[in-house]
Image 1 (cartoon, rainbow, N blue to C red):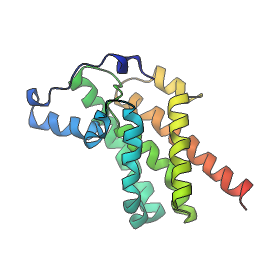
Image 2: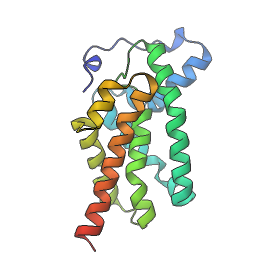
Image 3: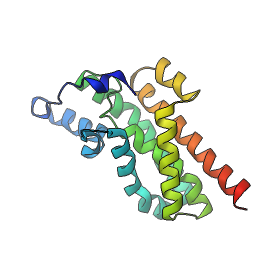
Length: 173
């Protein structure tokens, strides 16, 4: 957990330009990251609302959309951190959107999108995002700016997706 989340300065939307308000609103996950406790968990849960979009786009369309979401997220997260003056503030959850969406890619490919798999993917992503095994911890500590904010969650999503593959292919087939 980022130590900055223990003592967070308030976000003053009324003192921002309209552009900054829009970017920060995206960065805090359309408000989901403003939950008083566990904002990353709320942001990850909010990302589950994207499932109908990923299903509509299909596997390849989802990969393209998630790559674009991640690239745009580098700017959104970096700009949000700059505007609120806290690097990787826990309230910035656009990175959770990308990581949680990556976690769900195997389910879309395997056409196994059901509540049991969704909850499993959610739990796996949160475990990796909080636990931060290598190389997630390295990215979290060594990469700065918007890329650093995004990268640890992207890797956590990849680890969680890999776990889903392993569970599906080695334990259920």
